[in-house]
Amino acid sequence: MQKFCLTVTCTSTRGVVAAISGYLNEQGCNITDSAQFDDSETGQFFMRVSFRSEGGTTLAQLKERFETVATQFDMNFSFHDEQEKMKVIIMVSRFGHCLNDLLYRARIGALPIEIVAVISNHMDYQKVVVNQDIPFHRIKVTKENKPQAESDIMRVVEETGAELIVLARYMQILSDEMCQKMSGRIINIHHSFLPSFKGANPYKQAFEKGVKLIGATSHYVTADLDEGPIIEQDIVRITHAQSASDYVSLGRDVESQVLARAIHAHAHHRAFLNGNKTVVFPASPGSFSSERMG
Image (tube, rainbow, N blue to C red):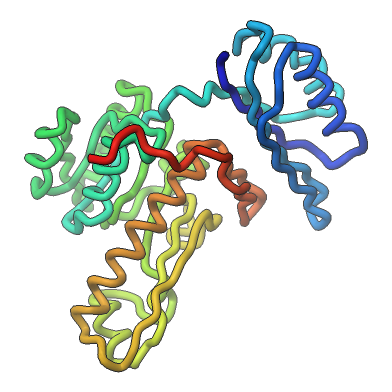
Protein backbone atom coordinates (compact mmCIF):
# COMPACT_ATOMS: atom_id res chain seq x y z
CA MET A 1 0.00 0.00 0.00
CA GLN A 2 1.25 3.43 -0.93
CA LYS A 3 1.47 6.11 1.73
CA PHE A 4 0.60 9.69 0.80
CA CYS A 5 -0.10 12.98 2.50
CA LEU A 6 -2.43 15.84 1.67
CA THR A 7 -1.82 19.46 2.66
CA VAL A 8 -4.61 22.03 2.55
CA THR A 9 -4.89 25.77 3.15
CA CYS A 10 -8.16 27.65 2.82
CA THR A 11 -10.46 30.11 4.51
CA SER A 12 -11.83 28.69 7.74
CA THR A 13 -15.38 27.43 7.26
CA ARG A 14 -17.64 24.68 8.49
CA GLY A 15 -17.42 21.28 6.79
CA VAL A 16 -13.83 21.34 5.53
CA VAL A 17 -12.58 18.46 7.70
CA ALA A 18 -15.66 16.38 6.95
CA ALA A 19 -15.25 16.97 3.22
CA ILE A 20 -11.59 15.91 3.27
CA SER A 21 -12.05 12.81 5.40
CA GLY A 22 -15.16 11.83 3.47
CA TYR A 23 -13.34 12.16 0.16
CA LEU A 24 -10.40 10.03 1.29
CA ASN A 25 -12.80 7.36 2.57
CA GLU A 26 -14.60 7.30 -0.78
CA GLN A 27 -11.27 6.78 -2.55
CA GLY A 28 -10.41 3.76 -0.42
CA CYS A 29 -7.88 5.56 1.76
CA ASN A 30 -7.21 5.04 5.47
CA ILE A 31 -6.09 8.10 7.46
CA THR A 32 -3.10 7.30 9.70
CA ASP A 33 -2.25 10.77 11.04
CA SER A 34 -3.93 14.17 10.91
CA ALA A 35 -3.20 17.69 12.17
CA GLN A 36 -5.15 20.90 11.71
CA PHE A 37 -5.07 24.52 12.84
CA ASP A 38 -7.69 27.25 12.61
CA ASP A 39 -6.07 30.70 12.87
CA SER A 40 -8.72 32.94 14.40
CA GLU A 41 -6.67 36.06 13.68
CA THR A 42 -6.26 35.54 9.94
CA GLY A 43 -9.32 33.36 9.32
CA GLN A 44 -7.11 30.76 7.63
CA PHE A 45 -7.38 27.00 8.03
CA PHE A 46 -4.42 24.61 7.70
CA MET A 47 -4.47 20.82 7.56
CA ARG A 48 -2.06 17.96 6.91
CA VAL A 49 -3.31 14.38 6.55
CA SER A 50 -1.23 11.20 6.18
CA PHE A 51 -3.03 8.22 4.72
CA ARG A 52 -2.63 4.87 2.99
CA SER A 53 -4.24 4.15 -0.34
CA GLU A 54 -5.80 0.75 0.36
CA GLY A 55 -7.97 0.65 -2.73
CA GLY A 56 -5.23 1.17 -5.30
CA THR A 57 -6.08 4.79 -6.06
CA THR A 58 -3.00 6.52 -7.50
CA LEU A 59 -1.61 9.93 -6.61
CA ALA A 60 -2.66 11.34 -9.99
CA GLN A 61 -6.19 10.04 -9.54
CA LEU A 62 -6.44 11.43 -6.02
CA LYS A 63 -5.36 14.86 -7.21
CA GLU A 64 -7.67 14.94 -10.22
CA ARG A 65 -10.75 13.75 -8.32
CA PHE A 66 -10.12 16.15 -5.43
CA GLU A 67 -10.59 19.22 -7.66
CA THR A 68 -14.34 19.24 -7.00
CA VAL A 69 -13.83 19.38 -3.22
CA ALA A 70 -11.07 21.97 -3.57
CA THR A 71 -13.21 24.22 -5.75
CA GLN A 72 -16.10 24.07 -3.29
CA PHE A 73 -13.92 25.43 -0.45
CA ASP A 74 -11.45 27.46 -2.58
CA MET A 75 -8.54 25.37 -1.29
CA ASN A 76 -4.85 25.49 -2.02
CA PHE A 77 -3.88 21.85 -1.82
CA SER A 78 -1.16 19.40 -2.68
CA PHE A 79 -0.82 15.61 -2.61
CA HIS A 80 2.60 14.06 -1.89
CA ASP A 81 4.08 10.58 -2.03
CA GLU A 82 5.71 10.14 1.39
CA GLN A 83 8.27 7.72 -0.08
CA GLU A 84 9.68 10.34 -2.45
CA LYS A 85 12.68 12.32 -1.26
CA MET A 86 12.72 16.07 -1.76
CA LYS A 87 15.46 17.35 -4.07
CA VAL A 88 17.63 19.85 -2.21
CA ILE A 89 20.54 22.15 -3.04
CA ILE A 90 22.82 23.15 -0.16
CA MET A 91 24.69 26.44 -0.34
CA VAL A 92 27.67 27.00 1.96
CA SER A 93 30.63 29.33 2.41
CA ARG A 94 33.44 28.56 4.87
CA PHE A 95 31.60 27.29 7.97
CA GLY A 96 30.97 23.61 7.26
CA HIS A 97 29.25 22.30 10.39
CA CYS A 98 25.71 22.47 8.97
CA LEU A 99 26.78 21.07 5.60
CA ASN A 100 28.54 18.08 7.15
CA ASP A 101 25.60 17.41 9.46
CA LEU A 102 23.13 17.46 6.56
CA LEU A 103 25.32 15.24 4.39
CA TYR A 104 25.34 12.64 7.18
CA ARG A 105 21.63 12.86 7.93
CA ALA A 106 20.77 12.54 4.24
CA ARG A 107 23.12 9.58 3.85
CA ILE A 108 21.52 7.55 6.66
CA GLY A 109 17.98 8.51 5.69
CA ALA A 110 17.29 10.65 8.77
CA LEU A 111 16.10 13.40 6.44
CA PRO A 112 13.80 12.59 3.50
CA ILE A 113 15.96 14.55 1.07
CA GLU A 114 18.17 13.95 -1.94
CA ILE A 115 21.04 16.42 -2.08
CA VAL A 116 21.31 17.07 -5.81
CA ALA A 117 24.06 19.69 -5.62
CA VAL A 118 26.20 21.77 -3.29
CA ILE A 119 26.98 25.35 -4.30
CA SER A 120 29.71 27.41 -2.68
CA ASN A 121 31.55 30.65 -3.29
CA HIS A 122 34.71 28.88 -2.04
CA MET A 123 36.46 25.56 -2.66
CA ASP A 124 36.84 24.45 0.97
CA TYR A 125 34.31 21.59 0.83
CA GLN A 126 34.67 20.40 -2.74
CA LYS A 127 36.44 17.14 -1.80
CA VAL A 128 33.99 16.36 1.02
CA VAL A 129 31.07 16.76 -1.37
CA VAL A 130 32.38 14.98 -4.48
CA ASN A 131 33.56 12.05 -2.33
CA GLN A 132 29.86 11.43 -1.67
CA ASP A 133 29.07 11.52 -5.40
CA ILE A 134 27.27 14.84 -5.12
CA PRO A 135 27.91 17.53 -7.78
CA PHE A 136 29.84 20.53 -6.43
CA HIS A 137 29.56 23.96 -8.06
CA ARG A 138 31.87 26.79 -7.18
CA ILE A 139 30.08 30.04 -8.06
CA LYS A 140 32.15 33.00 -7.03
CA VAL A 141 30.15 36.06 -5.97
CA THR A 142 31.37 39.67 -6.14
CA LYS A 143 29.58 43.00 -6.26
CA GLU A 144 30.29 43.18 -9.97
CA ASN A 145 29.10 39.69 -10.96
CA LYS A 146 26.22 39.11 -8.51
CA PRO A 147 23.42 39.09 -11.16
CA GLN A 148 25.38 36.57 -13.25
CA ALA A 149 26.21 34.47 -10.17
CA GLU A 150 22.55 34.25 -9.18
CA SER A 151 21.66 33.37 -12.76
CA ASP A 152 24.19 30.51 -12.55
CA ILE A 153 22.65 29.39 -9.24
CA MET A 154 19.16 29.36 -10.74
CA ARG A 155 20.46 27.38 -13.70
CA VAL A 156 21.64 24.66 -11.29
CA VAL A 157 18.22 24.76 -9.58
CA GLU A 158 16.44 24.27 -12.89
CA GLU A 159 18.79 21.58 -14.20
CA THR A 160 18.56 19.51 -11.02
CA GLY A 161 14.84 20.03 -10.44
CA ALA A 162 15.62 21.18 -6.89
CA GLU A 163 12.56 21.90 -4.76
CA LEU A 164 14.43 23.56 -1.89
CA ILE A 165 17.57 25.64 -1.36
CA VAL A 166 19.24 25.41 2.05
CA LEU A 167 21.59 28.20 3.10
CA ALA A 168 23.89 26.22 5.40
CA ARG A 169 25.88 29.23 6.62
CA TYR A 170 26.09 30.73 3.14
CA MET A 171 27.52 34.17 3.78
CA GLN A 172 26.14 36.05 0.78
CA ILE A 173 22.99 38.16 0.66
CA LEU A 174 20.51 37.02 -1.98
CA SER A 175 18.81 39.59 -4.17
CA ASP A 176 15.15 40.53 -3.72
CA GLU A 177 14.45 39.06 -7.16
CA MET A 178 15.82 35.63 -6.22
CA CYS A 179 14.05 35.66 -2.85
CA GLN A 180 10.74 36.40 -4.56
CA LYS A 181 11.28 33.82 -7.29
CA MET A 182 12.05 31.11 -4.71
CA SER A 183 9.55 32.29 -2.10
CA GLY A 184 8.86 29.54 0.44
CA ARG A 185 11.64 27.41 -1.04
CA ILE A 186 14.77 28.81 0.64
CA ILE A 187 15.62 28.02 4.26
CA ASN A 188 18.34 29.84 6.22
CA ILE A 189 20.03 29.34 9.59
CA HIS A 190 21.63 31.91 11.87
CA HIS A 191 22.44 32.47 15.51
CA SER A 192 19.71 34.03 17.65
CA PHE A 193 21.76 36.96 18.89
CA LEU A 194 20.27 39.16 16.19
CA PRO A 195 19.80 42.07 16.48
CA SER A 196 21.83 42.28 19.70
CA PHE A 197 25.19 41.30 18.22
CA LYS A 198 25.55 42.10 14.54
CA GLY A 199 28.60 42.02 12.35
CA ALA A 200 31.81 40.11 12.90
CA ASN A 201 32.40 37.69 15.80
CA PRO A 202 28.91 37.69 17.36
CA TYR A 203 29.90 34.87 19.71
CA LYS A 204 32.87 36.88 20.99
CA GLN A 205 30.56 39.85 21.55
CA ALA A 206 28.15 37.59 23.45
CA PHE A 207 30.99 36.20 25.58
CA GLU A 208 32.14 39.70 26.47
CA LYS A 209 28.60 40.60 27.56
CA GLY A 210 28.19 37.46 29.67
CA VAL A 211 25.29 36.05 27.66
CA LYS A 212 23.75 32.97 29.33
CA LEU A 213 21.73 31.62 26.40
CA ILE A 214 22.91 30.83 22.88
CA GLY A 215 20.22 30.20 20.33
CA ALA A 216 19.68 29.46 16.65
CA THR A 217 16.84 30.31 14.30
CA SER A 218 15.91 28.69 11.01
CA HIS A 219 13.49 30.53 8.77
CA TYR A 220 12.23 30.97 5.24
CA VAL A 221 14.19 33.57 3.31
CA THR A 222 12.51 36.79 2.26
CA ALA A 223 13.78 40.14 1.05
CA ASP A 224 13.93 41.14 4.74
CA LEU A 225 17.13 39.10 5.15
CA ASP A 226 17.06 37.48 8.62
CA GLU A 227 13.44 38.38 9.34
CA GLY A 228 11.59 35.73 7.33
CA PRO A 229 8.91 33.43 8.78
CA ILE A 230 10.48 31.28 11.52
CA ILE A 231 10.29 27.50 11.21
CA GLU A 232 12.41 26.27 14.12
CA GLN A 233 14.38 27.64 17.08
CA ASP A 234 16.30 26.28 20.04
CA ILE A 235 18.75 27.36 22.75
CA VAL A 236 21.60 26.03 24.84
CA ARG A 237 22.51 27.38 28.28
CA ILE A 238 25.91 28.92 29.02
CA THR A 239 27.60 29.46 32.39
CA HIS A 240 30.32 31.85 33.51
CA ALA A 241 32.82 29.00 33.13
CA GLN A 242 32.55 28.78 29.35
CA SER A 243 35.20 30.42 27.17
CA ALA A 244 34.63 32.39 23.97
CA SER A 245 35.60 29.30 21.94
CA ASP A 246 33.05 27.25 23.93
CA TYR A 247 30.39 29.71 22.78
CA VAL A 248 31.35 29.06 19.17
CA SER A 249 31.30 25.28 19.56
CA LEU A 250 27.97 25.20 21.39
CA GLY A 251 26.49 27.61 18.89
CA ARG A 252 27.68 25.42 16.03
CA ASP A 253 25.89 22.40 17.52
CA VAL A 254 22.57 24.16 18.08
CA GLU A 255 22.66 25.69 14.60
CA SER A 256 23.10 22.23 13.03
CA GLN A 257 20.24 20.73 15.02
CA VAL A 258 17.82 23.59 14.38
CA LEU A 259 18.50 23.64 10.64
CA ALA A 260 18.02 19.87 10.38
CA ARG A 261 14.69 20.09 12.22
CA ALA A 262 13.50 22.90 9.97
CA ILE A 263 14.37 20.92 6.84
CA HIS A 264 12.65 17.85 8.32
CA ALA A 265 9.46 19.86 8.80
CA HIS A 266 9.58 21.31 5.29
CA ALA A 267 10.48 18.03 3.56
CA HIS A 268 7.64 16.25 5.36
CA HIS A 269 5.25 19.03 4.29
CA ARG A 270 4.57 20.00 7.89
CA ALA A 271 5.47 23.70 7.55
CA PHE A 272 2.95 26.18 6.16
CA LEU A 273 3.48 29.86 5.47
CA ASN A 274 0.98 31.98 7.36
CA GLY A 275 1.70 35.59 6.50
CA ASN A 276 4.82 36.63 8.42
CA LYS A 277 4.63 33.45 10.53
CA THR A 278 4.45 29.72 9.97
CA VAL A 279 2.25 26.86 11.06
CA VAL A 280 4.42 23.82 11.83
CA PHE A 281 2.60 20.59 12.65
CA PRO A 282 4.12 17.82 14.82
CA ALA A 283 5.95 15.01 13.03
CA SER A 284 3.99 11.91 12.07
CA PRO A 285 4.83 8.67 13.92
CA GLY A 286 7.90 7.01 12.43
CA SER A 287 9.07 10.04 10.43
CA PHE A 288 12.28 10.39 12.47
CA SER A 289 13.44 6.83 11.87
CA SER A 290 16.61 6.30 9.82
CA GLU A 291 17.29 3.75 7.11
CA ARG A 292 20.65 2.89 8.67
CA MET A 293 22.95 4.00 11.45
CA GLY A 294 26.12 4.97 9.57
